[in-house]
Structure formats: C-alpha cells, structure tokens
Image 1 (cartoon, rainbow, N blue to C red):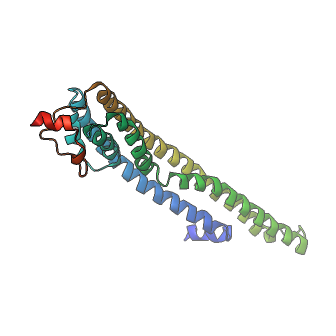
Image 2: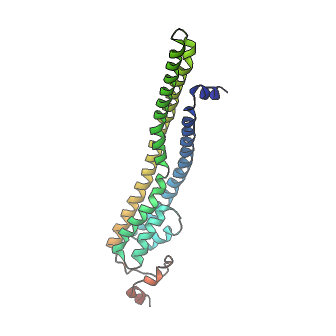
Image 3: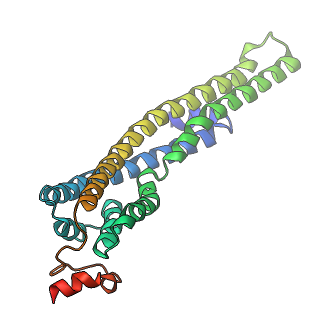
Length: 231
C-alpha cells in the first residue's frame, strides 16, 4: 500500500516512470536468460569445432556444425557451404553476410534499455517541473504562510526526481552487463570464424567428399574434379 501511496503522491508522471522500470526489468530477465544459455551453447559448439580444427579436419567441423542450431553455427555453415562447393574464395564474404544477419540476435532489445536509461531522468525532471508549478500556483493563491498547502507540489517534485534516477541508474548497469555478455559471445564466434577461414585458405578445396552430408542445395555444386576423384 505504501508503494501505491508514493506513486499517487508523485502525480501522473510517476506512471510512465513505473512503466519504464517494469519494461527494463522484463528485458533484463529475458536477455539474461537467453544470453547465459547462448553463452554455454556457443562454448559447447566451439569446443567441438576447435577439436576438429586442431586436426585441420573441415569435414569434422561441418559435422559438428550440423548438430547445432544457433547463430554461430549458421554463420560458420555459410562459409563451409562455399568451401565444400569448391568456392573457398567466397567463404569469407558468405560468412560476413550471414554474420550481419545473425549476430544482432545477441544485441536484441538492448537499445531499448538505452532509451529507458535516457528518458527516465527526463521524466523525473518533468515531474519536478510540474510539482514546482503546483507549488507556485499554491503560493500565488494562498501565499507562503501555509507550508502545508505547498507540501504536495514539493513532494511531487522530489518523488519524481528520485523515481526517475532510481530507474535510470540500475538500467545503465543492466545495459552494461548485458552488452558485455553479448560482446563476449560475439567475440568468441568471430575468433572461431577467423580460425576456420585460415584453415580454409591453407587447405586445398578438392578434399575428400565421401561421407559428407552437404546442406540441401549444395550437392549439385560439388566440383567435377572432386566427383571424378570419388569415382
């Protein structure tokens, strides 16, 4: 009850401030769960990839990649498709294009936290202004001899300022934490992608195709020389 009483004393500006706090908390909980889960999945996937890369086994990388469904695996798969289709020079570009499509997943809704962190103090300032307007309206009506009449406007001014800052400060911290978590995931993916590209550039593309389950639509582009070697 005291919470609702404070909101009522803060005036109408308190409602958007409270709404901002609810949205901020909801985004934090959703992103924290998604990114923590994604971080563990990416680590698991990249361990399998690096194990195959240590042997320069791109076939093993492909097999590991096809077992996972996530932005990281789809980025690497885009390059592997080009490589196993006999187009190793196009692998880097394919991975870069796919990365632009997939990596924003890890930063989704973080920009909303920036907006909340910016507008919450402004809403608090707006509440301060409206509270002071009420105070001066009372002064104009009854003078300064009745401080109890002015208390409502002053209380509104102070409460909204405090509420706006109370939402903005934790939101800035939350945004920083989630951004760092997202950056670590993206950095791990980029390092692994670079390692794979280095192996692609130093390994002859006409390698053994037998036993490789190429993604749909790629089998038709297997180089003729590779097919002849199988025969």
